[in-house]
Every structure is written in C-alpha cells, then in structure tokens.
Amino acid sequence: MADTEKPSNFIRHIIAADLAADVYVTRHWSGKPGPAAQQKVGADGTAPRLDTAKIRTRFPPEPNGYLHFGHAKSICLNFGLALDYHGACHLRFDDTNPEKEEQEYVDSIIDAVHWLGFDWQGNQYFASDYFQWMYDFAEKLIEAGHAYVDSQSADEMRTSRGTLTEAGKNSPYRDRTPAENLALFRAMRAGEFADGTHILRAKVDMSSGNINLRDPAIYRIRHATHHATGDTWCIYPMYTYAHPIEDALENITHSICTLEFEDQRPFYDWLLARLAELDCVNTPLPQQIEFARLNLSYVVLSKRKLIQLVEEGHVDSWDDPRLPTLVGARRRGYTPEAFRRFNEMIGVTKSDSWIDISVLEECQREHLNQTTPRRIAVLDPVKLVIDNYPAGQEEECLAPNHPQKPEWGKRPVPFSRELWIEREDFMEAPTKGYFRLFPGNTVRLRYGFVVKCIGCDKDAAGAITAVHCEYMPDSKSGTPGSDNYKVKGNIHWVSAKHAYAAEVRLYDRLFAVEAPGEDGRDFIADLNPNSKRVITAQLESALQGAAAEDRFQFERHGYFVADRIESKSGAPVFNRTVTLRDSWAKGK
Ligand code: ATP
Ligand code: MG
Image (cartoon, rainbow, N blue to C red; front, side, top):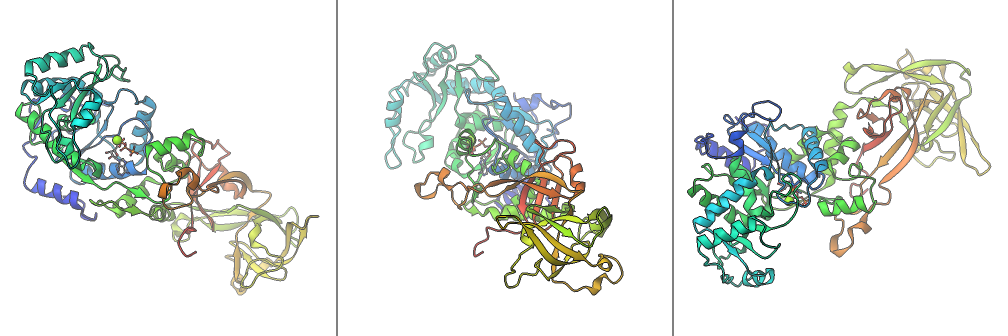
C-alpha cells in the first residue's frame, strides 16, 4: 500500500505494524463529543474523508510566525505519511496561547502548506475551538480526583518541584477534596482571581523520576483577550494538557513531534488514559512519536532569531529571498518539488544531526535543471563591436531551449553589430590557459558566429569601454561548414539593440559560517556581508515577457526567477535562486 519507492524509516515501520495489526480499524466516529465528528463536511464543502482514513496525522503550527525550512520537514513528513497510507493529515492551528496569534500568520501558513503541494481536505481546525471540551474534561478530572487547584506562589511551586536528582514535595493544597477543587476551579473560570494566584494541576506523582510527571500545571489564570474567543475565557489550558486533547478529539492516530517532547510523552499517555477511563475521548488513543528536528548549516531556524533578523533590518522582510522562511524560499525561486525531494533524502531519524545546506541547494539545482528553459543573460556587460558587420543589419540565430530536451525546441535570438558580453570574457593581456577573447584570439559567440578579437577601447582611467572584433560570415552555428572553425572559447552574448536591461538580485547565503552564533558569538556577527548584490544586467529580449515566478537557467550563471512581488508586466526583475555550481564547497 505504501509507496515502495520511498526509503523506509522508523515511523513508517510503526505505522505499517499498526495497520497490519488493525490497531486503528475499530476507530469509527462513535458519537463521543469531538469537533471532528461534528465537522464531517469541510469548510469548503468537501467531505474530509473522516470515515475512510486509515491513519490520521496533523501539522500543528502555532500561528505566531512564518513557517521555516524546519516546519517544511514536519509538513512533508505528516502530509506525506497521510498520502502514502491512505490517511488524512489535519492542519491545526495551535492557538491556545491568548497573546500571540495573528490572522496574518494563519493566512501565510495556509499558503505555505498549499505551496508545498499538500492539502488537508477540509480538515482545518483551531485548537481554541476546543476550549469548552478542555474545560469540561478538566472538571471531570477534578471530580475523579486526578486534578487539584494549587494556591502556592510560583516560587513555592518551583522549589517544591525538586530537581533531576531530588524528588519533589507535595503541595499543602494537594489533598483538597474534589468538591473544594471544583468550586475553586469554577471561581477561577468566573474571573474571581488575579493571574497567578491559583493554578490547576494534574495529580500524578511528585516523586516521579520524570519531572514532567510531578503534577504538571494544566490550566492557568490569564486575564487576556484571545484573538478568536475574545474575552470568553480568563483561564487557558497549558500546552501539555491541550495538545493531547486536540489530538484525541480529532482522532489522530500518530501524533508526530520533535525530540524535545520525548519527556512529555508519559504525561501525554497518562492524561489520555485518564480521559479514556472517564469516557471523554475515543479509543484507541493517539500515540506520540518523536523525531529529530531539522538542523541546517548556514541558516538559523528559530522563530526568535528570524524575528530579530527582520525587525533589526538585516533582511528586507519576512519573504526576503535570503531567509529560510517558506515565503522567502518561494520568492527566491526554490521549488516545492525540490523541497519534498530534499525531505525524502534526509529522511527521518531519532538522533539529532546537521544537514549541510548544500544538500538542499543541490536538490534545487537538480529539479531546476530538469524543468527550466535556458536563456541568455549578461550580468556584467561590456560592449563587443563587430567592425566588419554592417551597421543596421540584423539576423536571427537559433538557441536551444534545453540542451537535453530537443523537444523543447529552439528560439530565435537577434544578432547585430553591437553585442553585450561579460566583462570577464575579455582580457587584454591573457593569463595562461585563458581561451576567451584577447587580441588575436578567435572564439565562438555561442549559437552565432566565430569572431576574432582585434583590440579594445579604453577610457582615460584605462578601463575597457568596448572590445572590437571581426566575424567570419561563413561560421554561423548550424550552417554547413561552420564546424570547420576550431576554437577553444565559447562565450555568450546578447544583441545590444534588442537587449532588456533589468534589475537582477544576486542572492547568496545569508550567513558566512556553518553554525551562526556558535561558541557564544552573536549570530548577527556571522551574517554574510555579500548575501545580496543588486545589478543591472543585459538580458535576451524574450525575458522581458517573463511572468512573475517564471524560472530560467541563465546559461553559465545559474537559476533565476522573476520576482513574484516586484515584477511588473513587461518589466520583470530577477532573483538568483542558486548558482550552477556550489561555490562554497570545501577545498575550493
Ligand atoms: P521554533 O522552534 O522555530 O520556534 P516551533 O516549534 O515553536 O518553532 P511551531 O509552530 O510550534 O513552531 O511548530 C509547528 C510544528 O513544526 C511542530 O510540530 C514542530 O515540532 C515542527 N517543527 C518546528 N521546527 C522544526 C524543525 N527544525 N524540524 C522539524 N520540525 C520542526
Ligand atoms: Mg512550538
């Protein structure tokens, strides 16, 4: 059933075993209260296939920032598993925290997941929609003696929690009766107490070796307005309490998260087992599975650091093509296909490791090589004058759109007396092994004629202002006899009269070192000062018609995309996605 071409991993093994043992086959939407049961039809009118999904995963972002490359790993994993095993993956906004979330982030998360190529089939949820269930379940836990209201100060709670080597101490309030606790909890909910005066704790075990089981806090008083529920609530569930309930209410089967939640798994299991006993949630219960987060060299993947880069103006915006945000990647011209391929390649493991950014860049190159048409661009232009070509005359040369795909055809490129070539393709005094233009040397103008260099013009400061040459009329590429010319150099060009002069942004890695901020350095000090260079380039005229987000290979330079925000119709500007070769590779 699973796509056998994909490499297996420990999560796929778990799922395959669960499916083989029919662990989740008894899961039907059995009438227990739950948002999923109520939302059999998605917001867009499509049936979310709640009854047929064989497994159910979720991607649960907190809508308090833009998604980054680390989130892409989680998205590819969760949505990918759902696709491969005929399951469903929910998009759940984890908005239990009243202070931070914003609609702007919700919208950008929806866009980013769609852009990566995934769909939640109507299964879009907000954790804040479950506040009433969470509250009701808390009352049930209290009645059953599994939760109590603690009235110690924050300091007292901290001291009595103990340490890794020392057991915690029971709170003096731990033995309040269920009736007392219920009354206090209802008073908390009714707004009778100030923030921090009382807290609801699960009654587990203050002497547990796992600190997360020492009566963790599950509800706190917080007089704050929530973006979705307004002032309905002045108590809010803690993440460790809310998350397992969200999973259970949505009938998630495999709740996949990063390794730092491993120590929380015993509480996840404890809580859901109690709620199952109390008939609050469906069984079989979801299982939490942890994997190693993505760590990528040459970038930072922490929301806090990304915010700092934007707010302090080190980058232009959240979608700056240098940022490892998904909006940034999109503007840079990265493709979703290459992201998915990258995530397949790096796989999923249980141990932390670093992935070199060159692996992601190489995935982009591979995909762009297959999918982009070739175009000609001169990034650092100098004039080439063909002295023996009649002024006013022009003709067409034919350039292939893809060297390995003849079926993509050829396009005409205009040729005339004055061309733009790269400044580095001429040297007045050539160094050893230089085969391009220098006085007396012969090169081929790619897809055009063979020319012989006869000199150059210079300004008063000695800078070269034009290169002169003579062409061989019988050397035109593709015409009989053109092969008789044997030349070592082959350079690209665009006709000056026809060229489109465009803004091109040459992006490079945002940081100059592998591990920004390593060894206690301020990560800002590790920024690459050359991560963005804006130039005016001379492009072949066809590029003027490029639409936003059209991608190309500029021959000999790299892959470029028409900027999706700043391109205007008939006036696209281009961003460099990635160079043709890795200029950062060690030993170069
Ligand atoms: P950050 O660490 O950048 O603040 P976060 O974990 O707080 O991110 P959430 O919105 O809570 O951000 O994350 C949504 C999901 O993405 C979570 O399931 C989280 O585990 C996952 N995720 C976040 N960062 C990574 C990463 N580097 N690699 C893999 N998954 C990640
Ligand atoms: Mg988080």
